[in-house]
Image (cartoon, rainbow, N blue to C red):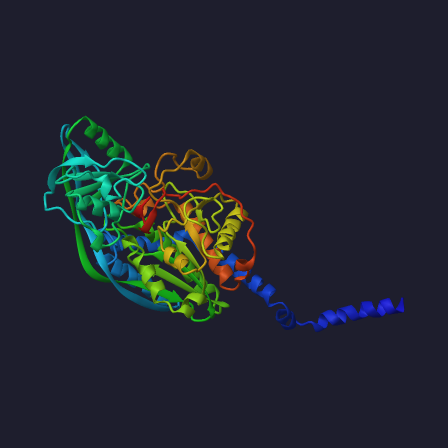
Length: 511
């Protein structure tokens, strides 16, 4: 009994001798997790969609005073970049510009009309890097390429003499749009029209200026199939005008990072700041850009000494083929790549008919591309866990290559993020899950003039700003979750905006 009493008396003395600083030294992982949880909760509570909307107002104002858009290489983008730069400087970040050269493109005409047998207009989208017709366009007969698994991809698809002086009508699939129009040009075609093999508009790219051989545009599946049906009955003559300005220009990314934090454990988040030339790009991608600005501001207020360096990027020329993020990754040293422990991408996070999509890091959905680099599954899991705890429904979305995570994945950096959908159509099941309207695009104003302040869904915006805030708060102090195994659970996800391989946001190159 005496021995037990002595032991009982000794226990409080032992506990008392273990000071808080000693406990911290004994279990730094627990302290990091505690700091991460505290900061994440604070940022989620403080980061506000209402406050982020003020940045969207600024982007809209810039577009309104610079020709209606904020495309890379334009005054609108330059002003947007300057605004972000100034804001991040004000918050106390180390901020820099990263300049690079690129080919600026701006479509000046995209018209297709059936002249005979029955006159009608057909909506068409010029492919990026297309050759141009003369002003006023050309008139020529259509010639359909026979459909197979690789329609229009091989010289044998173009019967000798059949396409000379005509416009080739080619179904999407089997090879890149660039390869299709190269083959059509070699067969004597004076233009190419690619029609979709799935629902929705077709906005594509030929890849680069050198690939463009003949004027090329994309039309919907329904319009393409109707033209094929008309051709089966006899000749179809069309008026076809595709013109595109192409110029060498300079643009720049904005890179901002915390002044403190371990650079060997850099946490990186990005969004593209440029719009297409068709509109102000407030959802695509003012939304992601404003979301990052808002969380960065709250981080600066809440945490002066994060354990890890936090770096934010606002990319330029994403709409031209991920050129800003590609330039950044290409310029990283081997050490610089190793220091970036994760990359999270936020592109279109407030679509009006939204879905809540989380990038499928482990390919558990079995859709499209395979899994991301090691650690990507954990990033997906961490976002899903955050949403699940808040009772927020979500689905997976494939790494299609449509946005700026692409270059990071290519060099093995764990990647993830969220997305609320573009031109793809919402399914009935998704309408039940998320609300909104089935059979309508997630963003009906995608790449259009209507992508303005009225195009923002504030509920989706708020949810995704919460995701950003939680990730920043967590990873600023604690990266241990990236080492925790993931139990793979399919989420019945899809591409969130239609399938396809892309070299830029919405700029499809193949099926």
